[in-house]
Image (cartoon, rainbow, N blue to C red; front, side, top):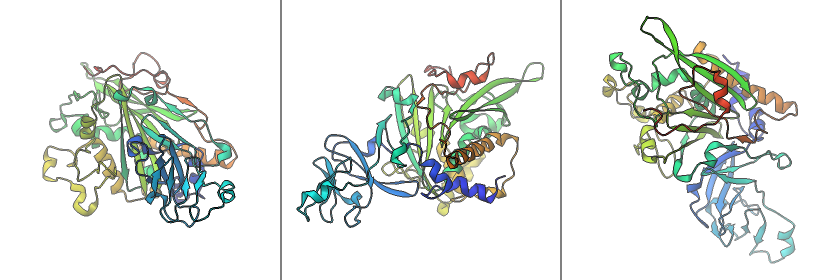
Length: 429
């Protein structure tokens, strides 16, 4: 259980908050590349860590991120014209380049004025189908961290964004929680749950694909320089009636909000980027050796129903207004009456309210990874307040940080998390 002060520290991400200062030391995903589909496409209004920005792709294909409000009189540049290698404010026509250069001031002809000023702009990188930005102290720009999906062929990778109206920590804690996989996601994790007859799911693309049925896995956790990783050891009964470890599922948690989830044929990198204290943009990147069937993944995640997910805005639309669309009648055969891995995860987090009060919870041994996640985040807070760098900030190459749904039982599980090997396409066969 956290104290109220610790809960506030972890959840609040605004400019002058303790966690907000930590978050501003890292690069963050702010959009998927498809939101800026081509030169001079429509500008995007971005919210990140409680602040507003505008992102645009100029005529040369470069992406810029500026403060949303025009430095002249404060009108939103998200309403502006993107043309001739800049974004132009509609109010008085001031035009800005991706580097913040003031290119034109139609209502003020003196060029010396615009030459001595510059619009607030931010470092930007576009990698792996995602636009990333750094909005912290420009004197302390950290190295851009590379993940394995950034090196994948475009056809072997897809990126899905889901915007959820709750605090980032609720979603990230769910990602650190191995014990919920075989319960909340029963339909796809253990298809025989109705008859108490475990049969491994045949779908190799499924991140909830469990090798054995054990909903109270034993956890081993080890801190790393990027955060921590853990092994969830699951047991099953052998012919002699004795229980023995049959599967080890290894998951790395990368500060400040990333994780890698294993599926037999693909890896799922998940980033829970805080828009505000009560809204999160989840970026799910799926990649492997073979082409990714995006529509199949969307269906598996439960996002193929337009009542829940808007493909244009990426907003998750489930609310208490219709009880999250839960089909109570279907629960005779469907565990949750909701269906879909991401849909179920989002709804559980939303059901807690926009920002959960963790002083009210009662934890058990299965929650050890959740406890460690909180501790490592609080470690980051202390490091920054002591003038040091938060965990993982300088770990530039994360391409060898891996995970597995079937760790070899004959060698230490820790070796799995540091040797990147894309699983073969037929791993579940």
